[in-house]
Image (cartoon, rainbow, N blue to C red; front, side, top):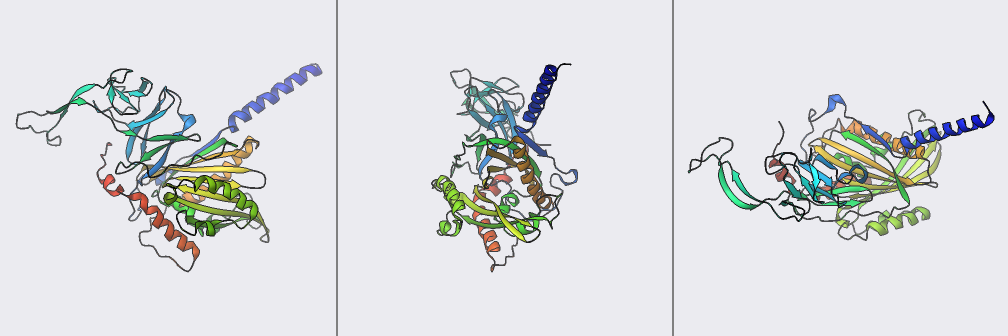
Length: 438
């Protein structure tokens, strides 16, 4: 074989290897399943707040929902069908068709640009208004509504009817408000059907590229997960290890943390970073988030400095992070170092009362190698798994005992006071849930 043939063969091999590398690492995902012995509600949890606080929740990643695609989800006690219309917009509606109860999200199809068609009998519902419509002109279907006088006993009414007529007219299905921001679709859920109290921030992160995502299934009360962002002391005990393969006598991680509600009058004074380069970066973030006045009462901010300690002696400031918790289930954590910047977006999806799906979506500088994005996700996921082992086995502390001489416990108390505002009407909502399961 000639030298030229060897060169061509070597070039093809290099291209093939790079293609495989590109396919695997360009967008890297990790999905961690629930442990078999620790699923659903088998463990005691103690007395807890309601399971589904009010706020914005992640529905899906934009790239997961193609034009004309229909999906369904169980989220915060609701069964929801969602789809991307051929008009490119995302819509979300109550999953069950009011005609005969079919799940619109299983087998349903997009119709008339913004509508979803029931797979059972073809009734179409507009994602904007919720109206059942006849055509692409969105003219409403007129139907007759009947009900059982007493469905549990199946008794007759005074006229001797098992089913009695209630009305004639239009029929609607419940619609949900959705927003698509920076590659993620969010849905507003409120127990009393109130309009949004605040808007999520659309980050100025065009210089960062979507690279990776992890999914953890966690068994605990929903509040346990975001509360980690206010728990300073647990970093010293849970998150000190860098990697399993590196002994702690050689390399350790140390974290210094501050947290505060954005509405506190001394917020800027207490949360401004003392190091100039960190303070400059921090200001660009504060300028994005604090300008949203409606968000401020529902915004909790975290500052985190990460240090690498070598041989239990030499301490180096490695990274600094600023986290913004918006509402009960969404966190944007910006991590900055001398050579890269990363945005971790955490989102919690309450599947059931004590079952949560936790997403970490990673955005990095475009110049970073793909394998490094995957490594950063692994590093983040490793720290999360430390927490998951505790979350899966702990109870919710109803009676709280704090050492108020320490700033760490003061921050925990303040955080729980702040988070409690998201439970308005949630207890009544959970009591009235229709259990559409057998």
